[in-house]
Length: 179
Image (cartoon, rainbow, N blue to C red; front, top):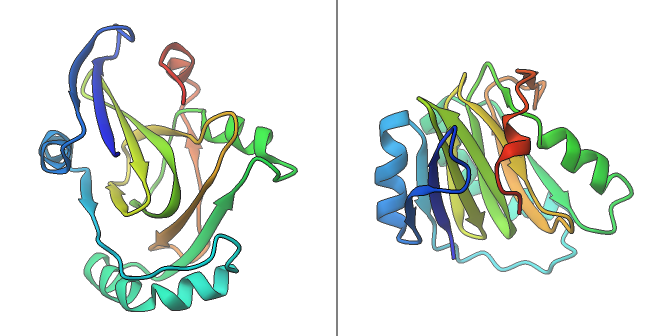
């Protein structure tokens, strides 16, 4: 079940908001301009489906989403515990960063924590299959897929060069719970 837990950024052990209700999650994220939706997708693919098959199956949804956001490209990111660089990729994603364009993700399978740092608060959003999250450009965040990452997500980009992070150097991600 998707979940949002919010903390003051100086109190990692004292949640000030916690909900698994999608409407409440979306409402709590709206003031920082982060979009959250649950999609009931009729697409069912095998776990080993290649990226091209995933993109083809979700093409109608992607076309609508890219048209609505002005995005220019989409790809598939898949991470499993068996991936030879799983630990290194997790460590990279765990560092707080920003982007110069929105970060839009739709979780096809598995789960991960998008952690947003804005206005003195830390928002820990557990995203699972069927969740769409839209993080505006400039929002400080990190991503934690856990010690044994297992997720597949569609990534939507405005800049066709793809995912480019601008690391803040802040070590805040080390003070908050990980997946």
